[in-house]
Image (cartoon, rainbow, N blue to C red; front, top):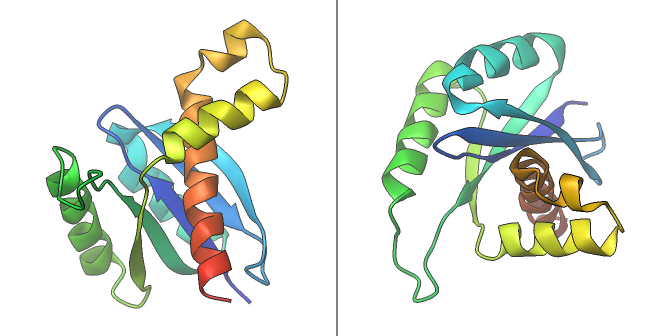
Length: 137
């Protein structure tokens, strides 16, 4: 059984989450600089059996596209081209950063860790993947 990969793609950083082999639970994997995303994913696909990608789609409150939408669509096209045998899904990522920040605050982490934007991105990727896994079960 393979795993699912959740991606919170950003201009500077990209949060990555991975599922368990049964695709029930998402876990935060890491946050990487976006410029190294392609190499990271290539190595991850070699090391882990990835069944599909789930990419967070930034949608405005009114349902329209925002400034990052073109970057996300470019990422999805690139993934489909580089890995044609691995499906790519997108899911509405509205409020994931806000939920991630609240999760960090609720977890009682210190002020320094709460300011860590990389941690927010990793938790956001986890929320994106878990939402997808929950909706497809």
